[in-house]
Each structure stands twice: as C-alpha cells, then as structure tokens.
Image (cartoon, rainbow, N blue to C red):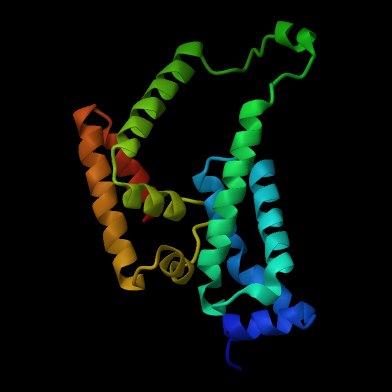
Length: 197
C-alpha cells in the first residue's frame, strides 16, 4: 500500500475525511513541536502553538495553493504563533500571589553556586550560539528538539536537500565548538554533539 501524498491527504481532509486529517496530524506534528521548542516556549505554550497551527490549517484547507509545500506553510504559521505567544508573555506579569511559598526552604535543592555556575555556562553558550549564522541557528534549533523531526520534514521546511542536512549540522556544530573553545566551553559542546548523534 503506497503512502498518500500531502496533496491527496489535503484534498481528502478538505472533503471531510477524518483518516486523512489524522494522517496529516501524525505526519507533521513533530515538526510543529520542533518549531515551538526552537522558540524556547514552555510545554504548555508549545502545545497551544501546535493546536492553533492545526486550527489555522482547518481555516485555510481550501486555500492551500501548493499542497506539497505544506510543511513550510505549517512551520511559518507555527513561527508566527510562537512570536505571538512571546509578545503576549512580555506584556503579562508573572506571580502567583502566594507570598507564603517564598518562606519555604527546600532542603534537597542543589547548592546555590551550582545553579549560578550552570546559568553562567548556559549564558556563555547561548552567546556563542547567537554568533552563528541565522541559517545555522535555525538548523540546530530544529534538529536539537526532542524528538527530532524527520529529515524529510526538515528538508522541506528549510528548502534544502536531505543529503545536506547532516553535513550542515556538523559544520554548524563545529563552528559552535570553535566559538565555545574560545570561552572554555568546548567539552560542553562535544558532549552535546555525542548525545544527539
């Protein structure tokens, strides 16, 4: 049995075929989660982005002009939703209103300096990451999500051949490692590369 093309699935979903819709959701949901995670959203916010993106597709099912480019359309829509979530979060104040919780001491918490050192390392690593080209940052953010999206989806979203994804990822990580070595973070990058290979 052959796997339906995106064009076939979209046409059938537009006609009310629930199985076709489920196939689309199954095929591209990991890609949408990857976009949400690339924007460093919380799990709840990323879930909202994924759900809203699928809602946008429902609203536009009959208007998709090039169905085989659906992954790119979904990724672009998800990015816009991520930015909207981040804008809203910037306007909202954070707080629970439960000041009594501030008086509780967690006896099992890690030492304060361990968290400070980890935060300092993370800040230095993000600083190195921001020095990469925009293309490298996008490739790494998408590929470093858990679970990683399928290379076919990444290729369509980034408009690049599947065979160049791995080498591009390797070059970007090598560049990041070089920047990290300059600030004595090299071992952290190498361990990251090993865990994702």
